Image (cartoon, rainbow over all chains, first blue to last red; front, side, top):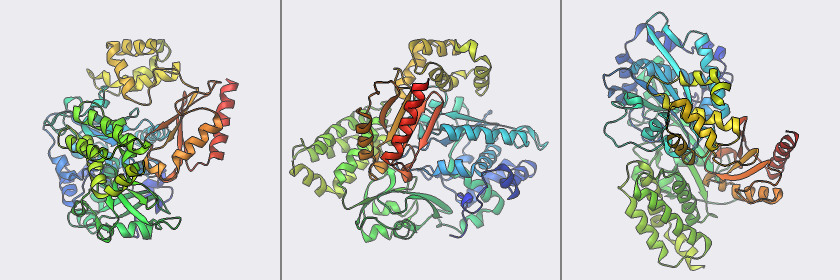
Length: 416
Length: 166
């Protein structure tokens, strides 16, 4: 790809400064939208672009906006709680291309007819949040936020709200609970947030990367956006590459790029003369894949990754080499989910606890041969029984790990 | 009292949320209280509850849920090393062990001089720059990435010196 859509600071180094962003057409789209377009026109162009939510679920963004309830006030809540292991893309956007992100939030607010946006950033992004507050103040000073914008009668305020360390708050309904000052526990749905969300009002919740796409989609049109990616997964995606890889980092590539190209061309392959063994395509949250030729030739888009038994999710691709024991990988993943389970649903709270116990036995060398089947049975018992996806992620990781790398577990247990 | 000392800041925080939904200010106010007192004591919780007109239980229950809130005093700075899977694949567990050995504490412990608490934490969104850690203190939270044991020990010595100077 010759040009970045989201990581534009890689093409225009100082775009993180408002003056530079404005010089490159920044906030012209938002100004034009508020002065000359109806909210429905914006929803239509985003719908036509085929943009899908970049936080993991891949839900069509324009469609989500069109579901908004009629009641007022309405809110926009931005999910900047980036906490999936292996994900570090929203952070780069907010640190280096913050104004394109903020313009995306502003356009989203106009389309949603919302006068307030809350940017929910994970508490660990403390320094980043302080800078975000400064950027927002600059937008007020320049007349891009505030009352009666461009004389068109639209009021808009942005607020930064810090989380305090809880992965579950990246789940959209838990994020709303947390923003309201409660424990970050998922809500029962329906009603969906678009009808009854933040402070019981219709609310759009979108991820940072999703919204950062919006200014260019609106200014250049849906056909331009669809010239990247595949028919069902248009546009580009930031792939976060981490683990046993020569060049870890963020790579913005068209959706549909094969795993092989990401890992070996962009990521520089596996270091230290080791071989590729396994891939986690979406951090801890999607089933682990064996690095077969079929998997490596699979296109990384929302429709293709499920064909080989996993998900694209947030596209946080963790690379695992052949020196790594997958029973240890599953131990680490389960430790994460056990820590992050909010405790609301019994199968997730208890299931992650018991799965971790068994994996600890395997890891520490006190397991019996029956423990691998026991682990699998506990994991299967959690599936399909929880309010949110965390229980599904936690159990799915273990089921896939045991199914696809059974010999690693059996070897580990037999060696004890 | 927070309510007297930070009246203006508290009003600014409350104004971010709509009338009738001021409870949303709990987390920002807990951060403020934690920075003032070093940790969230019973008194700090009572004060935050008082500002919002809530039962202290409603405020206190959040502390155990969110990892950046602490209901017990720790070191002046908390050194929180990510040992989650992506960092662990790049040696973060060995890195954490080496730091602990050099400092002479176990994970979760506080140094005798009260300067540091060393902790292992879950993913901090710095996976491509592992090993990495964050330092949480009364000033805020700062990231230190692409670390070696040597570079980390320099930062740790700096934190200890700061604590001694206080």
